[in-house]
Image 1 (cartoon, rainbow, N blue to C red):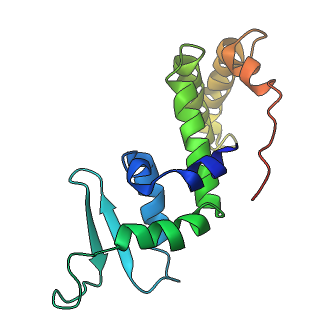
Image 2 (cartoon, rainbow, N blue to C red; image 1 turned 30 degrees about the vertical axis):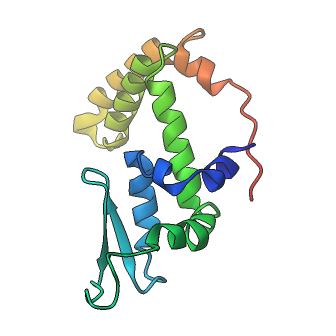
Length: 160
């Protein structure tokens, strides 16, 4: 069973316990194609709707969770947002693992700093080159966790 199938078959109440899932699902639910926007707040486990429904029309969103699970979750599982959520979970599990989290974060920070520099700017060129040398010396040597990760044979998940 792949990650998308696991998400699709999991009870929405359980999925919403994950703050990251709730954030991605809220983003999906707020797409302009939907007229009513439900929003889940993890901190107090509460749903709100925008625009609000008059209180005399519905008894506190009765059946909302069942409806979302039946009519929105399957479509969420077909979007890039779902695949980004899965990627985010994979990256977080790697970062939090003893196999390379600290080195990967250091690599990411150094790379982000380099990407923010215009290497053609003569005043910043020395700084850019020093960061590049540091990147090569610390993260791009044979045996580093970053190189090991980049050389892994990752099997792509079949699209739904």
